[in-house]
Length: 213
Image 1: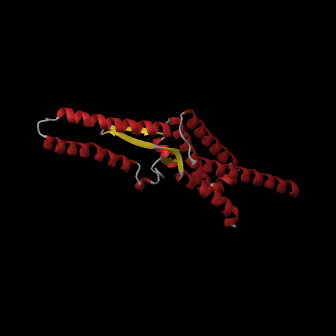
Image 2: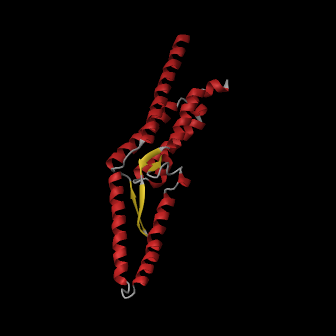
Image 3: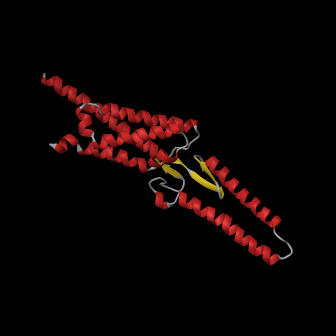
């Protein structure tokens, strides 16, 4: 009885919907152009610009080091440059790798992306963060409290609200020049499947009631 009320195939779709927030949602690259500077790019064009700025900053710093050193002793120059370059650039590269490293797969599914969970923390605009946050909450409630939601016949409203939040996120991304990745479209597809399924179930329920009358 419990399994029939839970409806296992539909439960699987709701579970996949919640899991899809861990897929790549938007492009993201954090570039450390200097020890205390961290530039975030949400599209490839900005990422290339930030990486070029990082390289130019590295070159300018090396030139500054050369100008500041005593040129009377070539060995001292060579040793000092190696030390300064290792200290300034190897450290910042390591920090950048740690920020988007493999130990943070929940937030960074790849080296160049944010997951839906990651967007909740690091997305470009507040509007997008709010939309994703509400969407995650609705998907969570729909998965774990479906029996109560379905009993009150609120399922279609939860799913429609979730789709609305994802559309708000998509529009905000386009306006903000954020590159969307496949995770967003997978989520939207699963939500549409849920909505169509719920509409069909409501029609079947109404038809059964009418027939019984």
